[in-house]
Image 1 (tube, rainbow, N blue to C red):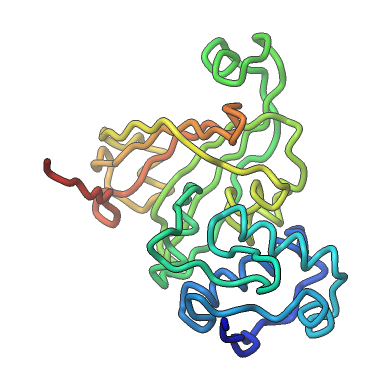
Image 2: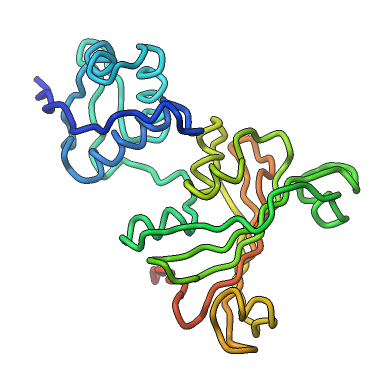
Length: 250
């Protein structure tokens, strides 16, 4: 018989946050699983118990659990309940953002939004998003800090139908976190990494000397239907940031 895990230590849900309630709960449960607080093979409390514990509706709890089932962290079995999947069959299906990476490394990310509006799509963006040239697209330009120090300038283009991307929300949360909170599942990306010298304005914002070396990253992220959701062009301080990639030999 599967052991029942003790109730995880969950924080109160922030009902004033733009992030949906179910997604806040899913994030906390995922963190409890990743930390080992809820061990592999353990059974979670049922939906009614979690709902009562957090003061949430049962459908909200059910949606949070289903999110983690879809992600491969939990499995539902008739007569057993919802259990944590052993690590060897977990699947990494989502992309991370710089915000996610900084949080995981304890770097205390903060963000200043430099621009949040729309622009007409040029030829390249129109082709990326599959829309007519001149169609308005959302444009977000941000300066990202790590532990109070500027580290990256980011420009992201998105279709205008994604809700909740307000300036206050973008200054408190990562962009991918907000996108996923709408129910969009980012599944794949095409990414190019390069390097160049900083322009005068980039050097000023990033607190670097003129023409300092910068790392560049251009990425288009797609949802699980193959639709382009976001296109980003970012520059990073080469003195403070690097890209790391693992490779396996044959």
